[in-house]
Length: 231
Length: 231
DNA sequence: TGCGACTGATTGAATGATCAGTCAATAGAC
DNA sequence: GTCTATTGACTGATCATTCAATCAGTCGCA
Image 1: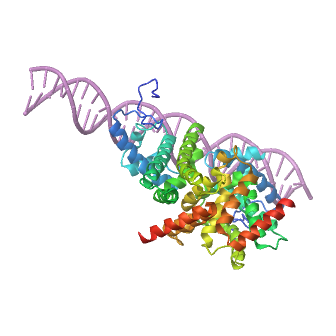
Image 2 (image 1 turned 30 degrees about the horizontal axis):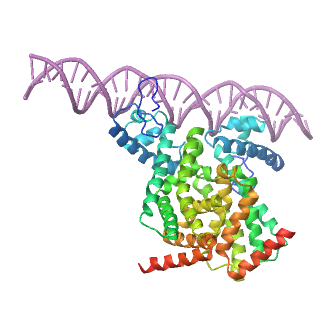
Image 3 (image 1 turned 90 degrees about the vertical axis):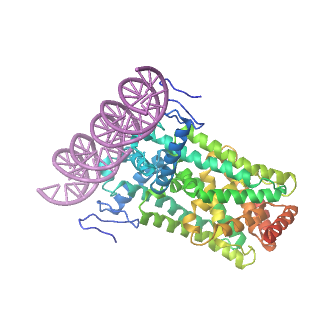
């Protein structure tokens, strides 16, 4: 999909084309480029980072970058997709094998906060730089954000159906939780010196849970916490 | 304060110096520049906006901008201070004359969300562009954010002392609420077509309030809502 | 009142630096 | 010997910033 006239090809599902054909080489070089770019973009910003900076940190020449990417903006897209795909990969695995709806919900929130923590630089970058993408690519990123939200929404709906979560507006509640997770990254300059991630997650989860649960849900939540503590 | 060797002077409390001396003229021109820059920075971003763009939209020449500002970054600082000062001006006035601690808290949250809504472009810009400032200026902005948070923290503490709010971590609860307000701007691409600001505020406030209040607080909150509805 | 300095505001063309993106040349694999 | 990957010097465009020139008042003085 999305070849162009010349003979530049290969896509790897991101919409970014490469001159080099060998998929293994493309993957290797792109991951070098993305690693370097993530570091530089998040310390200096997209516009202050030059392709030469990225190439140097990645240990390749500036011209070579353009064998794997058509333009600088492509690099930004690859960086952002890299973070977002980490969400989609890591959050679902966290709840495998948990049956209790409340347990699944709490674990999803916990996992979301922890992925964000691991990818703090990239998470903040998404807020800073998504607007630097072309509109269709910006939309792609937003689309992926919605898919991550859907993971959370699914658990909330399950709890709601089971009468454990109050019938509040789902969109509002989902973003409420999303902003808790993102807030840890966005406000890390504040929290870093005051709270551990564990404390942040515990306190934040407690507030939303109490706010969102029905009395029946609250009972299950208390039971879940008891079980966690002793285990 | 903060003159420099030459004879360039005038400060107006922002740390940005101007060649022109007349404070009234400085204020007038800077407000033209800030208005133009706010619009352009938030649609195109800081780096994609040229001084010429700003000058043109402000109806002046590009050279004149440099009579009121030393460098492009100064313009960004002025834009960000303009938004943040709006918070500090508008939030406190909202609770004048309210005695009930719960009423004050709810009103503060409401006011915070509404200032953010009015200054949506600037609020998002703060997330996108604060890192483009020099470190001391970035700190100035963070300092001002803390001052805004303190307004909220004061109301929360009052409620806590009165036994209306549970003894949760204040910093976490403050940022919880801050992220609700900022979330409206940051995620307006999502909410815009789905919810009104009023609904967003009502639903969000309901969730945090239920999450944070003691039974006594909940009673007062219900009473406050009843009073609001009939009034 | 009328006129010629003087002061400070304003203009926009010119300068110089910075980079994204290109491409001719080279290296290395098979 | 062919084909692909890689290099890095080069080009052209884009701005931030400067500055010489102009303009608009204002004041002093006849």
